[in-house]
Image (cartoon, rainbow, N blue to C red):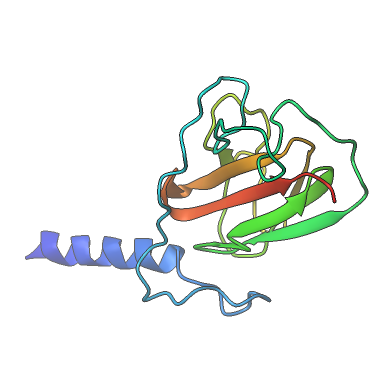
Length: 166
């Protein structure tokens, strides 16, 4: 009986540590909602293509994976709250800087799904109140996740969708 009580107390603490913070300035998703999941992204056909980039006949809708663009001075923000990224999927033009702000009570990390990419931040650095920024200069889809509160395809996940400048 004592083990059951201890297990119940431990589960309650774990659940409370990941609960939404009522002081967050952005609305977090409903805590009772099922965890977010993402359908698998298209697989790549060449190692040089960004994650989610598919090979297709050249046209205006498929960004060229080998094209990079200079920083354009634009900035977009993603907030890391206690169970989610707000905006979960963010569309920007190539050259835009994305700033992640840890606006919750918990430590987080930002891990690109593609392990060959070098951007991201670890949990020791991305503590409550911390900020992290990266300029995306190559068109493509760049999924990421918080390994503390999810996996590469469920839980605390997001994606940066980078288009060619118009």
